[in-house]
Amino acid sequence: MELLPLLNHPGWFCCCLGLALILRLQRRKSWDPRNCHVSLAGKTAIVTGANTGIGKCVAMDLARRKARVILACRSRGRGQKALEEIRSQTGNKEVLLELLDTSSMASVRAFAERILQQEKHLDILINNAGASGLPYSMTAEGLENTFATNHLGPFLLSNLLTGLMSKSAPSRIVFVSSFNHKKGEIHLGHLRGQNIQGVRPDYPYNCSKLMNIMCANEMARRLHGSGVTVTSVDPGIVVTEAIRNYGIFIRLIFNLIGFFFFRTPQQGAVSSLFCAVSEEAEGLTGKYIDCDCQLVLPSAGAQDRPVSRKLWEASEEAVGLATYSPK
Image (spheres, rainbow, N blue to C red):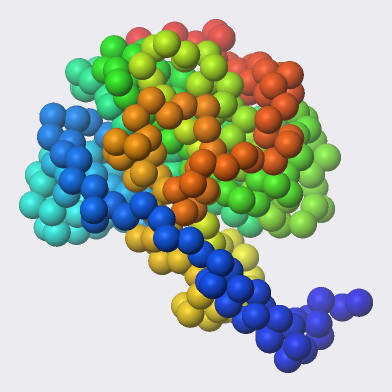
């Protein structure tokens, strides 16, 4: 069956609206950052992908709490615009911009080295940057672009900064995953682009979000007793620029339905903020938090410890972590 006639059928649109309404009605009351008065004065936080969407909203909240906030962004121009807006709205001059492209391991290493040289402590790391619908492509380092951007970059960054975060303990690392991880699979060859050409556009994204949870859980086990907590979160269905790589028709339908029923970036930021700042999340590690800030079990695959260890080792090899030492 051709896809376009199916999408043009009025029944398809009605079904989408009905599904969105059901999701809206089932939404539970979640933790509200406006009712949390935790101050982050004297604390330092990094938010990746902080120039737009969920990341920008997270950074705005942290800045309002008087944290020193480092916006880790790929674009200098868009990052600078976000920095000026956050400073203007919060009055916090300790909001800084550092360039970071999570698809490039060289960029991740350079960013981590600057942080280790410049910062005396690091209390919060929000691995928010990610993309969906990227066309199949290989990076200059021989990694598949979606897996590099969404999984390997955050994986490497977190590992390079855990020493500083251990010294700053108690500290918190948050990986922004997705409920779509349930549709993902683990094939270690995907990291280097094997067997994913011609798959549906969302498949690499779903797999990378599964990897986020598995490596977050494995990192929590490896950092047990260090004072560094590691959690993964689902922000929910959020209207952001994350779907910018899809066709215009898909974007139009998504944004139209989302305007009425999906979460705003501010609402999507709540689960990340819950894990990053709330008293309820203190000491919470190796757990998965849904978009309503509820502790839930991820998919059965995400709980597979032997596969998680194999994924961790394959990720170490892919990014050259075992052979790399910061300057």
